Length: 245
Image 1 (cartoon, rainbow, N blue to C red):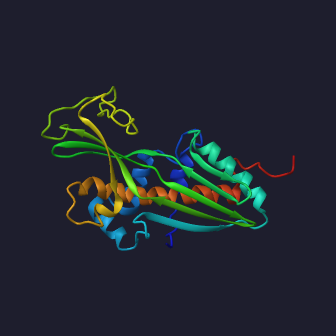
Image 2: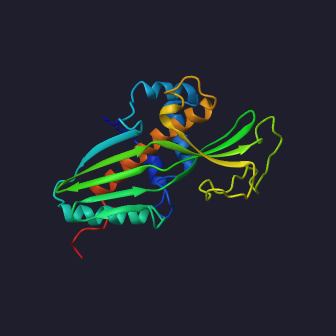
Image 3: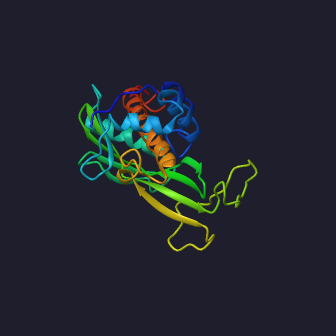
């Protein structure tokens, strides 16, 4: 799928490698609103006219990034450095094969959507799979998301009357990656919503407002990932990775 190149220079620059993600969800939302508008249903439908799902019904983006003058080994070391500095999760790099020139990263971007519906509250996260194929003077990046990870607070919607606030006045959901059969709170349930089975690809979706925003935010995050990798390949991680030392 051809990717539309979007500029994230100002927003991405504000995110640091110390975090476990490319950028904070709040910054991502600001960017998405500026680029696509604040009407998530309309934005999602407009994007769906430009994007198609792959044969596995996943949202997939692919970009080839040229790296003149850098051989396969140099790019492999640079991208390992980038992945390690960017994702604090020790299990984020799921494949690291120097011989084949392949790095696969899987790390959760938490809480890209927090939505209060009529009956329930939803906290939505995504876990993209980022595959980097490396050759002399070029790399290929493939970004794939098949589903949204959902933490559903049953009964905490506008009519539910079950709200639990933290010190910042926000609803608390716990860990959206809880172990199976966790009984910490009987009102919390982990779910997965397959992108292909929700809005904008399915018009009659009971969670269309949540899934519309999730779709737009997932698309915006793909651009942040691609831009960050391209910046690392072309200009290095911290700007002093040359051999003159």
